[in-house]
Length: 221
Length: 221
Image 1 (tube, each protein chain N blue to C red):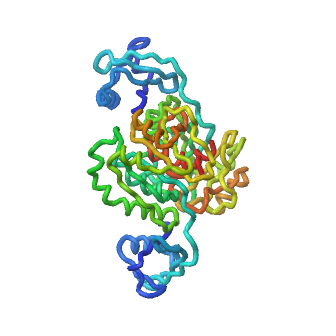
Image 2 (tube, chains in turn brown, red):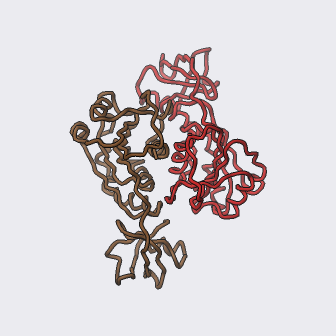
Image 3 (tube, chains in turn brown, yellow):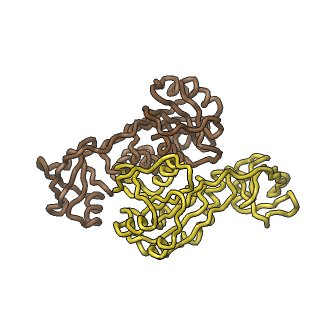
């Protein structure tokens, strides 16, 4: 935990908070008397432990800038979903659509992990020292989702078979779509292309989604 | 499994292999009669299932090019070590040094996972459709390791506090050092700098090692 995240309900005075549970355990484990803290969707600064579970906070700075990226992700297998959400959040992504695709197994949509995406996003914020929660939306129908997308800026769909190599250092907002294991099928790529997306590749290697997202983000920004 | 990896012992004829165990299960699970195959540290091509566990192989192409990157990694916690090795291998990294550092917990060096790094590298090759195994070395002593490094090309140590931002699109071989959770301590950064490394950052966000490696690789190459 690189940042203690607070909610308005933690405040027992204008600059005084009381915490319990996992966060208190973490604060005790770290053992420091002063640590970094931030209010979810608000400012950040420091917190000083004044009693067990009570801290005096001083929030005087802004969170780091958001990444101008909208991530459109075929719902990953439950086993990796948690760390994909935490990882994407840690990089500053603020808009994530989890969508269906031909090669997304139907059972993934029933995973109980879908009920805990917010917790994973919080872990990502704590990791990266950020306070601004991402918006995560589930879209179970591929065609209407893609047809209703309004593309502005650069729109890319990662596709190992594409001949165009992913651009780098893009100075505009980006929409980036990443397929399931095995990739989007041709019809899905065509749908994205009709919506204004360009199919791009990172080369001949096929990467797992949890590797591909940071690799693409590192290249794009 | 995007590539069936073979070893010389699998061959029962010049172009005929027999496989069992996990690989046979995977081939059966995929259910295809033709699949991509490659000989570890050799060429790749296709394999056709001719009987249960028997395939006729035709290896006529080279593996994808290696990434000109030497990764120097403070030994990660055992929980993430497997996927860090598989992920780094999938990106084409061929030289990985796992080193000690002040903030590496001593117990990590006793993890049984250290005995199975080769298996994780194989998973990375299977994922990325590559055949060339990385060389992975364990270096338990920080100071002699860094002092004996012979730097040529660009040498960078990732350090969240650095003022220089990580360069992009580097057209040279790179040595990249990444610290443990909490980072390298100042003395360690100074050792790297004496050895010719530049401390660079990816911005104010602190990323987990499994996110930082692909983000840095995506940016550098």
